[in-house]
Amino acid sequence: MNLEAQHYRDHFEVKSKLVDPFAREINYLRLSVTDRCDFRCLYCMSENMQFLPKKDLLTLEELDYMCSTFIKLGVKKLRVTGGEPLVRRDIMKFFERISRHLQTDLLEELTLTTNGSQLRRFSNDLYKMGVRRVNVSLDTLNEEKFNKITRWGRLSQVLDGIQAAQDAGLRVKINTVALKNFNENELFSITDWCSSKNLDLTFIEVMPMGELEQEDRKSQYWSLKDLRNKLEENYSLYDLEENTGGPARYVKVKETQQTIGFITPLTHNFCESCNRVRVTCTGDLFMCLGQENNANLRDTIRKYPKNPERLESAIRSAIDNKPKGHDFDYSRTDIKGQMSRHMSHTGG
Ligand code: SAM
Ligand code: SF4
Image (cartoon, protein in one colour):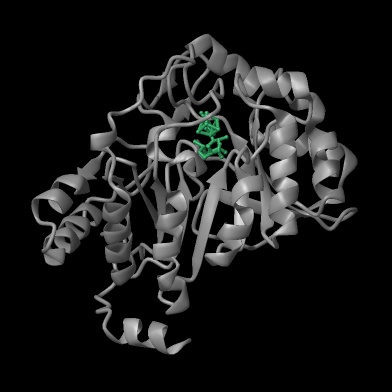
């Protein structure tokens, strides 16, 4: 730690940790920094999205103030997401500011989830700011299908972004939403491509978010249990014990030595170890992805800008209301627990 970092740390008052009523320590924050995006993925946004007025978004300074408060309360991992985080104006200034917490070791990891479109431009800077891992969402390797699912995206730009990220020294994980009748037939090509490019891979079960018609949702739903069974037709998979406190479970592929993750947010298999909360770009703190319960931190930040105790106590009371688990439930005839908000607002 350099002298400046040491000085900063000496004057940074660390408070007692955030622990919820079920004795889960909250040390992971996912932060959406914008609801805007340069893509319009079918399962995430409608084509004519009405975005929020800019004044409703936390400013970069407010984001920094809020994240620093979470770090004071024991948050060790911060994942920046959106919308598309890299289309937020001056977002690198935020990364630069927040990276001071990496230098003091108060923050252990600063990561990002992105659609990859801007990685050519920003990868070197991200690395300089201390980011070491990025998740890039990519559901298909076929250009036409890519246009179809993202509506506005270009596959070549994303592939180039992934290359730029790797060249900059970032470890890249591909996040692929499992979509029946869409990328089922690419299961092996995506897996092999990731293996050949030394990319980690995680499959995500599609969630009942946003505005898709119920019929579309049902025809799109591809359970990861079925996906895994299909993978096992070609590969031998071994369960890994690795548990990040989140909804991902990991396997090792014997033939390729790859690690593959499965994120099944619709099942209840991870709530008891949940260590995370989310904050939207408007400062709403969601204690659980699957429930509407939230606390508006922006009001507290704007009403008491010079009173960190107010923000700390607003965060603590919200954590006191973190639910034990969530309510998602797909059934054949109805979709219960469907969320009205978009992933782009909450931050996926
Ligand atoms: N724009 C960035 C990206 O696409 O990676 C970050 C935000 S995006 C909302 C985060 C993740 O949520 C992406 O991996 C995306 O595929 C996933 N996602 C969005 N809508 C989803 C849905 N309805 N079900 C499952 N995953 C979804
Ligand atoms: Fe944009 Fe990501 Fe949503 Fe696609 S999934 S529309 S890239 S925010």
